[in-house]
Image: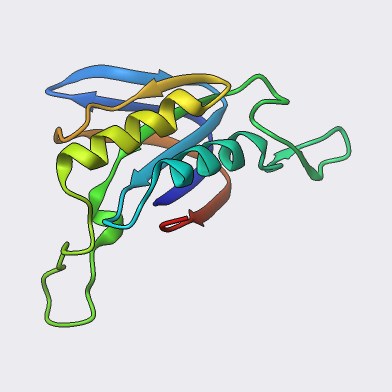
Length: 145
């Protein structure tokens, strides 16, 4: 699984013109599931997401987690994180998981997060509006553990 995390002041996801998820200060998590991704990967990545110290403490150092600041996480499924652009000009998605398994692991990741979670709509075309804070953007990855 791959998770792109972005520290945000606020973020929202829209489907068909309607807001389906929105947060204030916290993290935007774009989640991709690969063919070799496992339930252990989903749980490990959720714990890592919740405990990463990417928010400033009183001295301005990145020393607090989203859990520490009582922040929220907006989770959006994004199979394109498994796009391979090594050949040609169109991405290949052969390493992405099948939709049913991807949804199971996406749901497992969301359920394992120990903070307030908002979600996009799995498989839908979404418009994401995010106010990046920092910017702080990190890639978390764990495959087939």
